Every structure is written in structure tokens, then in C-alpha cells.
Image 1 (tube, one colour):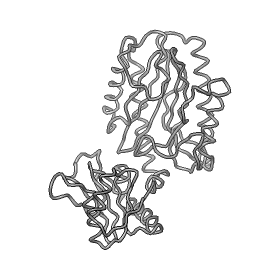
Image 2 (cartoon, rainbow, N blue to C red):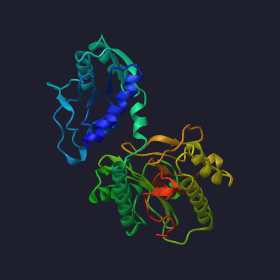
Image 3 (cartoon, rainbow, N blue to C red):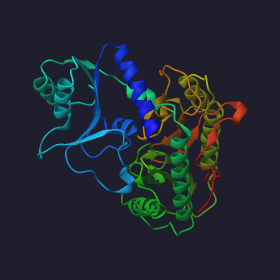
Image 4 (cartoon, rainbow, N blue to C red):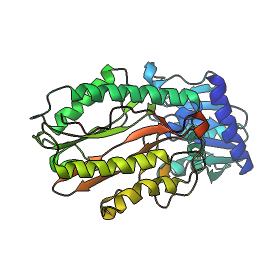
Length: 368
């Protein structure tokens, strides 16, 4: 893996040099982990003029889920507690003879930016922008393997929950049980706060579980994800509780399923982000639900659960192969509930079988 991290840092260095920056300071934790193999709490990565180093506020964490830094990096542990690794790294960049330093302005606070400027007055600070995030969009097969294992864990946790008694249990209780099952099956932890929504809450994107109890005839929407070796996947399903679904539930479910299938089937290298969104959105919009739709149909996943690309109406850009994304249309009807169906897939060319579905729990409308 050391060669992988070295190649990633070399790609970033080329971009920095082309922009006139002699060194770069990476402070966003996901970006640090991508380039260094690990991101101890508060650490930053310096791509220096003569040496790359990982500056840490304290000793490295030995937990295997946190990863270990690339052995090719120098690890610089601050000598006293309370110091700022970003400030220390900026000072070291100036010592190495750099005259300019690219920083992640979207991550640094104003106070931290001022402290970096103060400690290294000889450095010209420039904005690195989303250069690392752009490198992270296309995943290698090792990264995809981590996502695939995370998806298997999430599928397993969800499948076990569906075999248990659900009526009378609260949304909050079910969410906590799902997160426990994720860890039991080998996840580092949940990829995000698990959402369980019942009855009138169902189908609501990002719903926070409440003490509402599951009732007969409810729609039950579940959205969860597993983190495995730092990589995060996502799955969402909707079910009916305890009885045959009502006609309106079947109609709404079939509509959202058709929209989700249209989005999934549109995934291919070279397809515009907004065209994936349009494929799913048109199905729901033509049925009269245009105003009830969420702002996007899906998004990229990886070291963060919500990263580029964004599959939204105004998004610019086109898909590449080996880009993992979610496709997650849904409709929520106030006072009644709704449906969400969410999968994580990897964009693949047609010659390789088309989009690879990572989350395989059935999308049939089950009565539990």
C-alpha cells in the first residue's frame, strides 16, 4: 500500500506545482487518511519541499480500525500537549525552504488560518481547493473491496432485523439495534446515524429516530450504512408492517422502485451527473410528485458518506468508471408516510457488466 499512497501524494504534488505552490498542508481528516494511510485525531499532512511528514498532536492510536501511517512518511509528534499540528507543519514547511503553501481553506477555520500565517510569515498561502477530493472520486479496487465488504455487513445487519418482531418497538430502539449488529459483524461502526422511520415519518430523508412505536399497517423506512477500514457505504429499504399493503402503499412503492431502477440503469462512464438525477426524477415528476422530491438523487461515497459526485439537477461533470455512488430517490407524503429505496453501486462500463450493485437486500415490498 505504501506505493499507492506515494502515488496519490505525487499526483497532488504535480497539481500543486502546476499551480505555483511549493508545498501543501492537508488538514481535512478524510484527505489526510487518503494520502497518508491514517489520520490520527487532529493530525495534518505536510507535502514539503524536501520531505513529507504527518504532524500529530499526540501518540499514534494502535487500534487497527484507525489504520497505520504510510511507512515512507516521517511522523512528527508535537512535544507538548495543546499545540496545533497545522501551525507546526507550516513552520516546518518554511524551514524546508518553501516560499508558498497551499492550504485547504474550506477546512481551516479563520483563526487557524491566521495562526498558520503568523508562524510562517515568509510563506505565501494559496487555496488548495478541492484538489484531494477530486483525486478521491475514482476508487481503486482495494477501496471498492472495502466498500463491498461494508455493504455485505449492512445487508447482513438489516436482514437479521427483518427476522425479528418489530411491532411495538420504537424507532430509536431499532436504530440502536441495527448499529450494534453492524459492529457485531465486523464494521468499524455505522457510516452515519442510522435512520428508522415509521408510519407518518417513513420516507423522510435523514429522519432522526423517535420514540414512536411500530404499528400494524405502517410503512417502515430504514437507512443505514457500515464503515469498514474507513470506507462508508449506504443502503435504504422500505417495508410494510404486519399486514398486506394498502393499494396506495403498493402504488407509491412501485413508483419509487421504478424511479430508482431508472437511476441505477443510467449509471455508465461518460453519463452526466444531472442525467442520472433526471432519469429518476422524471419518473416521479410525471406522476405528480415533483414538489415532494429531495434536492438530489444520489451522491458519491468513500472515506466520507457524502462526497463527490453529487447526482443533482444542476451538477456539472460526467461519471467515470470505478466511481461508487448511491441512487436513493424517495417520496414523503406529509401525514401519511412514504418510500425510500437506496443502493450503493459502482459505475462500470457495459463491457464489464454495467453498474455493480453492492447492496443486495431485496427491493421487493415485503410485509413483515
